[in-house]
Image (cartoon, rainbow, N blue to C red; front, side, top):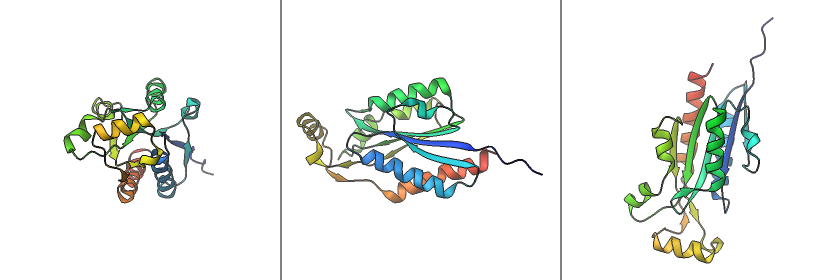
Length: 174
């Protein structure tokens, strides 16, 4: 009689202020759950308690970008993961979208994390800027950075990236 394969736990989590990045994390988790066979267990968690990342074999961690940086919850989660070291780690960021392509590259801080080999990769997705949801300071910053309002998320890009992660895991994690 063969032994059942050990369950592999994949956690998808994201820091999101207004919900757009949370929706991206939901979509990634849904795609991974469909694409990954047993013995994978895909769970979508919030970052209110970082212990949800304990014992994860794989983590897909994202954050909205504010003022050129990951949100505090996302940055705290990444520091936590440096100590627990999951088998694999993918990062994603969402927004802002600027009229100037060079500005987009300048505001993304997670690229350095992937470049240092602390993550398998980092993907940047467009955000969804609903100006009605913003506070006064956020509106001023959005205007100063020439951030384009509207939904700039490309769901086919999100799906393709999640499918890429699933393929990597199927081919490299026994």
